[in-house]
Length: 63
Image (cartoon, rainbow, N blue to C red; front, side, top):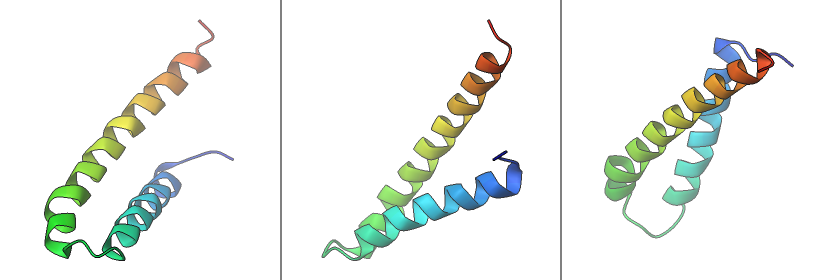
């Protein structure tokens, strides 16, 4: 399966949504989750996505 931009975006949103949804189900306040946890999850996810893409490009070159 090849990942193009729409598939990658949907997978990213689903994973972040599951994490945020699970945290909202806990007795923590939603203000804390939406203002602190969600942005950090998104930034970390984007960093890992970029790192994974770059690693895949490196592996594809066969070095």
